[in-house]
Image 1 (cartoon, rainbow, N blue to C red):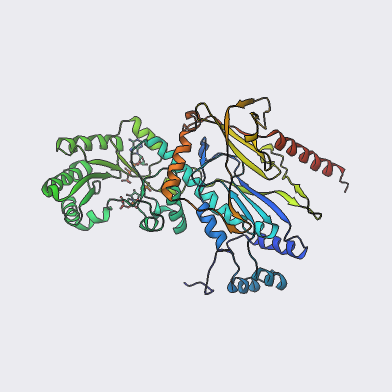
Image 2 (cartoon, helix red, strand yellow; image 1 turned 135 degrees about the vertical axis):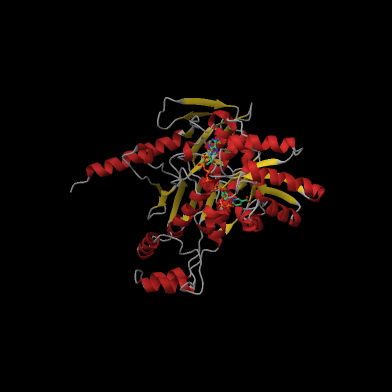
Length: 488
Ligand SMILES: Nc1ncnc2c1ncn2[C@@H]1O[C@H](COP(=O)(O)OP(=O)(O)OP(=O)(O)O)[C@@H](O)[C@H]1O
Ligand SMILES: O=P(O)(O)OC[C@H]1O[C@H](OP(=O)(O)OP(=O)(O)O)[C@H](O)[C@@H]1O
Ligand SMILES: O=C(O)c1cccnc1
């Protein structure tokens, strides 16, 4: 099958309704009015105490290529859904908005803006779908990876998910997100080439099946590789796989670096202990035991409790598909809009569910840390022009339960949303991936353990500044007054 048009771009990677709204904005003369949209999620993924932001590199790639090609316009014409004048306008469209975003690897929490687009309404609307698509997935996978990392401690973690991922893009960007979240290497060679992630791997059952016995397969592999990890469970791990791996390792001696064996089935606790004993008795005390087979943080924690002798963990399906929670559920909402007189008016989306009522106004998120111990106290969401660094103390309160409050002194406040695009121009340089990963770890270390446990973590405070809270209440009241006076 081939594509129907000679070129493909991501500009049409958007929902049709975005283009429909853009046509309305254009025809009604609203296209260039300033709009501020914010992207956030409402619930912590996997019930985790924190999430790890990922996706910015791809967001940048997407924004930089944003342009309607001739074939995009040609295709849109064939749909007969758009006005010709509007399509001609799109031909010259340029994204001239500003984007402020969390940087990759930083911690993010529910109900706070993690990315913000501020610019002409028409372009800010166009990018909604792609931004959500990118950030929803990558942040989810980085967070899942961090959860898995939290239970393995310092054991190496290998990403094996490509074959089970939801198509090729998910494998590539999911692997990158997993590396940000704490994985050490990937089996995906293309991800190694593109991003510089270390690649690593063993061999598959096919090799052993092709030779029809463990010994010949391991021997052939050893004769063609220096570093060897043998997969020992094709026929019988304890009776054939491990004894043959040991035999080959002894025969090859220093001609190979016998790094260990991989087990991929059976009772991993029992088998790994027996395998350890066999390797040790044969003198291979440094050989590592690799494990794979539908592993995730729950199984790993359980295996650790059973004192399984596993040194290296290979994780595929349950990481790359975010198996237990396949969607982050982030949304993109209009929080402020320029009226016909050039004045910015903050906007709200009301819901009968209090948690779903959006917080109006362009905002900044401040991570508040206690200077005495460097630990994170919580996040303080302020209106954009507020700066808590100018204050000696800040009053932090839970916006849903205002009686839960505290006054923080001797604090540092770090702005989470950083300038990425300024009126369409890229002004941010994405750091090396290894730096992003390191940054993430450093910031995770600043979080109290109570927020980091896998099960039922403490809820991290995401508080609104008094101004932000008052603004929200005032606007909600305003909308209610408007609705109440309607007569039909
Ligand atoms: N000791 C253990 N405790 C908890 N979970 C385990 C233990 N050993 C294996 N598991 C996990 O149990 C799940 C199912 O393993 P199961 O034994 O049913 O299949 P299998 O041995 O892989 O069979 P197959 O040969 O079909 O691959 C896997 O996710 C595996 O990681
Ligand atoms: O279990 P996951 O966490 O998804 O990890 C990836 C899986 O992919 C491989 O199995 P597969 O049966 O595809 O190929 P194989 O013959 O190499 O085992 C590998 O052996 C793992 O079991
Ligand atoms: O290298 C491996 O062992 C590997 C790679 C991909 C999937 N499963 C295992």
